[in-house]
Length: 284
View 1 (cartoon, rainbow, N blue to C red):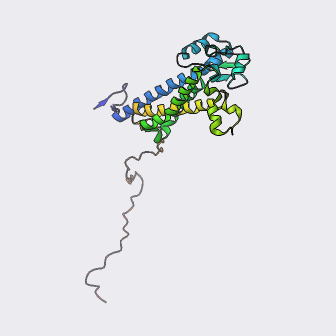
View 2: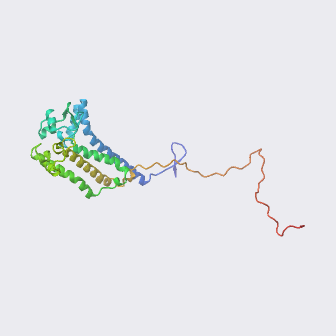
View 3: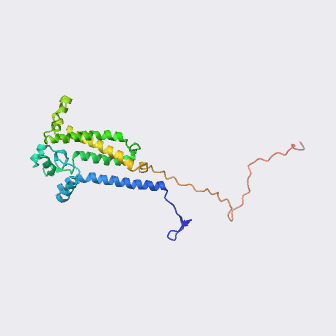
């Protein structure tokens, strides 16, 4: 059975194998998931860029949209286009921020210290790590296998502890809780580390480092647990090595040995020696 194509020579009708069709669907869904997560993780970084460019209206729309997902406290957020990656409460207050929790949530930044990313440092580490994991997962067989649920629970436990202690500390008074001084850590380490490491939320401090690490653990663990289960058999998404371009061999044709007109006909040659007659020779 063949089907004619535009009046040309008939071409055979080829049906897509079911396995190839399923692999194509997995690729499409995987691309959609990675693209959506990348957009969701990238939009908060556009808000300070828009503020820098003077596009205040689209920037405020992003800030407002992500305010439903995050506390957006300025002392626990990254700043762009300023001199410091993270700004201390004293620096924020000097820039005009209200030092209360609601005031630090509403403060977006200033031309002097830069503009706040639309969600906190922990949220940045969570969603950025999940996005990067999805980009790398097709390249490794181990990453394409779903993470055991018990391991996932262990990976999110540090975030639960760190987030809960931050919340309880803030209830004691913003800037006055046990996570603001971390006196327990000073005692535990016998003050062997610099003083700036124990208190506050500056970049590199214990609080900032804990939020960074726990966010990465949660983001990688969530992506590693959910995506391989939602899209099983991720091997079909992995890029395969290109096959070498070896020309296909067609049927071999015997050489044409027919004589042409005007060519002399060569007698057939025999390379075999003549066989001797049986019974020997006569006359000798």
